Length: 268
Image (cartoon, rainbow, N blue to C red; front, side, top):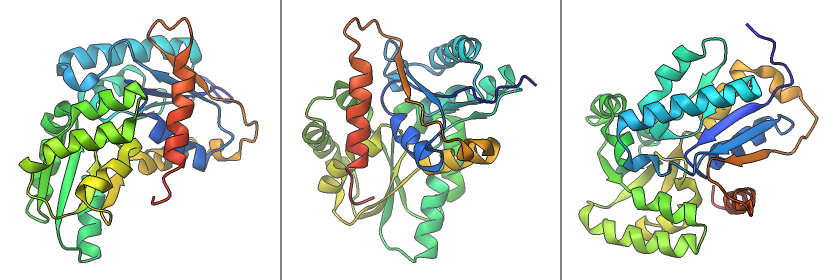
């Protein structure tokens, strides 16, 4: 195994969504060096076929691992994880590779332990919801708690636009609400973009709704695999990179804006 001490952690996503995972990583390891990469030229992943996503994820992983020799690789994208995480792990056996999955299990456990009434709503991209791994998870828990699924790909486009996000997200969710049963106590945010629009989700599904997402679990797993990250104090700035041609370099600016929105959610 190559010595990668001091090298960055790679955090990858189709665009801006993985910033919700990066924020959790910063919480546990504020001194860790990170390179955040958004594959904006190919986004949104949720509208692509599984094969297209798998090929893209492998190609990007190979290129960035070669360039940065990271100490860990985090695919902070539920869709990419569903489509390709096993292949990435096989390609890079010497690097800790961590994916992101819809937090359905902890949501069901929370419902049961706290004797909560109501239903669970799983929001994700169509690819994530149709993949075998999630369908197996759903079959495992659907007899324990009432669960509804909501594919919401347009939310990704709204967030990526960085324009009037909460209002537009709320308007979009209102168009989807009539098809649902309602009465939700827990919402599983099965796409890393969706924590950005918690306020819009509350406005549509109820101010008391609680959230489950996989970001905290991903960060904890990273620290478990690379414990030295918590002891680093260098406080290096995060590098924000994207695959789109952007001569004015707006991507870092958008990243910082999304991180501010995530930090501003006082109801977490």
